[in-house]
Length: 150
Image 1: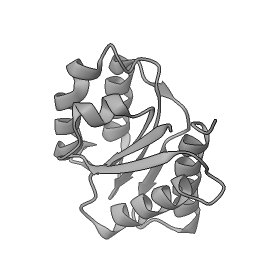
Image 2: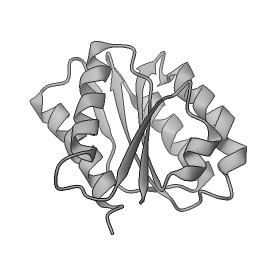
Image 3: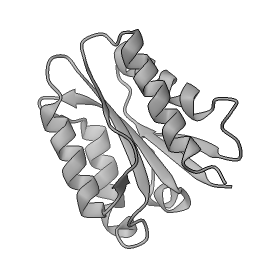
Image 4: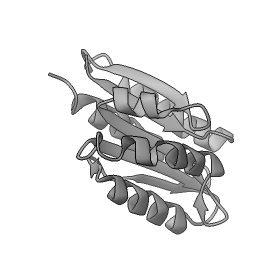
């Protein structure tokens, strides 16, 4: 069964709302035969990445960059997963108080280095997520999971 790995750093209610919407979309009743595995960024391992078929990343934008937790995740998995995960699909969401540009740039640069294939447009939110934002997160989760259905 194909596996979608959700790696997230969720330190705030705003990030939590986005994560819950992503999970809801990825586990919607119409999604069949896809295992969804959730890992906090500080506990996700290279084995988790190697065992998954697609990735969904979530982070706050902290001081113009991705969270230290997501950076730690990438530092731990980059070289062990570099050759084995090329071309695998991924998506991501970012929440920021006022700006997410640096965090988006960082994720794009790192995933380009890994040669992962972006399978959906990122969801970026500043301020409190509204209904449109959580619906976009739901769609993000559903899109990544549906792409793995046989």
